[in-house]
Length: 91
Image 1 (cartoon, one colour):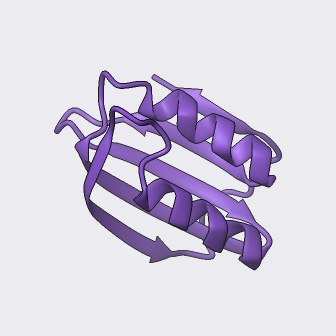
Image 2 (cartoon, helix red, strand yellow):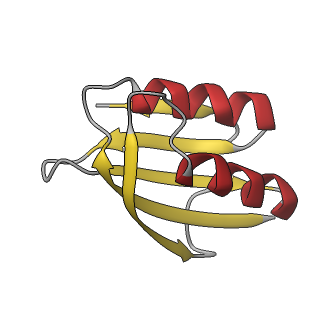
């Protein structure tokens, strides 16, 4: 089990980024949350098998939505992140 948090910056709000992130997570089989932040970034927490998390990270780096653009991605592994059993879009 791998647990991560990401802060994604770029053209990530107003382009369907959160909903496409959920779709990618559901297809891969990872769980967590995605939400918009006040500074224009998107915050993601995810947990799942290590291989699935690595694939999820790669898909997010490429932007899950065609009209989005990831310019910066901060990634941190953190074992204290709450383990979830579904992927949700919040706020």
